[in-house]
Length: 430
Ligand code: 4AD
Ligand code: MG
Image 1 (cartoon, rainbow, N blue to C red):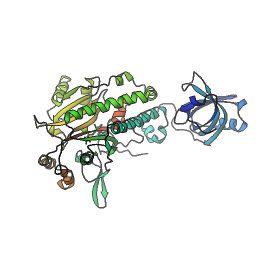
Image 2 (spheres, rainbow, N blue to C red; image 1 turned 120 degrees about the vertical axis):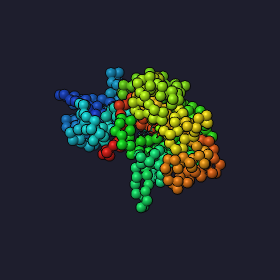
Image 3 (cartoon, rainbow, N blue to C red; image 1 turned 90 degrees about the horizontal axis):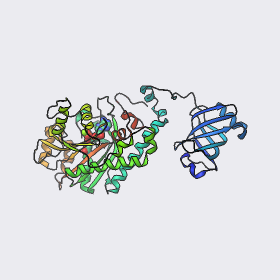
Image 4 (cartoon, helix red, strand yellow; image 1 turned 180 degrees about the horizontal axis):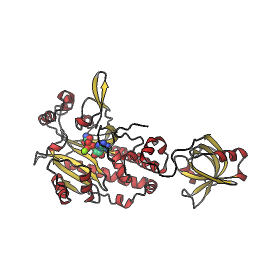
């Protein structure tokens, strides 16, 4: 009677098995008790009948509390009314660890309370569904790039310089010098692209963003591909293939979770290539038609992104931004050098930017001018300039925020539900 997982019950029909898990819920009356047993792989109802268990099991049942951990032995019985299709007819019940009065009850709790109890909130079915989707997307990301022969390059977390602007750096002491938590692995991927051709990194990144929005975390996971000799049009295609692949993957593997989250899957099924592509100046026109008059050079905020995205039924790609509004490393458009070959992909349904990327400057003189124009410390970037000195090559890449993507596919109200332990403005507990 070795331990089995609830999700595999169909392999054990009419057999007696052992399950280890927690009491999700329970009720008992007179001579019968009903336990909702949760083991991480699923939830099953255990039926405990006084006549069929020994005295010790019955006593255990009587004092069992929600979230106590248990070991349950019982027979797997088919039951068409049960959500899992099975029930467990319990013959032995042992408490492994008792539980105090559980703070999270089925009634409504405020978000502040739930966030304070994030370590327990993880056990609830909605949070489990969200994090299961996250896990599946992370697998999908690795599969997508390894199937296409990209080499994984783990970029450092502690870095000597900024990648995405100096205003959002977390600074820390590094043996008397300053170091910064990585905002992006990009600068470290570009040299690796010269070693392997196609590379990607996937790991935590940090932004000290003083913004308290549902789209911002201080610590989030970013996946960044970087490809040698790839120019801008191909970059847009890669982003489009990547998103359609991941959406299809979630639809294929996370039906149960999407259902739990009451996600309308028809919206996801519509996410097929080609995505609409518009240039920055066309985006300004759409915004103006919707009563938002922006100056050329203005960046889009959450409100603008939502207006733009609502004009389309699938992710929209916005390109050719004014160079002045974008990062120092972006390649200018050959036809109009004031424009950058930059790409933002906006998710539908108000989720905003999920991908940001560009073709990179490969000309040494231009890049070094841009470093000066952006007031960046040249010494810290010497190694980055080296790439342009030893066999420079056109190349492109982008970054996608895992949490932004998951929030959109799962249609979650806030990024905090897409990561096990969110780091938010002024908040680092638990
Ligand atoms: O547009 P960003 O800043 O681009 C870069 O960092 C580039 N260096 C990437 C590259 O080209 N290799 O960030 C990329 C993505 C955004 O589109 C968004 O999905 C996510 O990272 N992101 C955040 N996600 C959660 N919280 C935040 N504070 C985020 N900031 C960016
Ligand atoms: Mg961006």
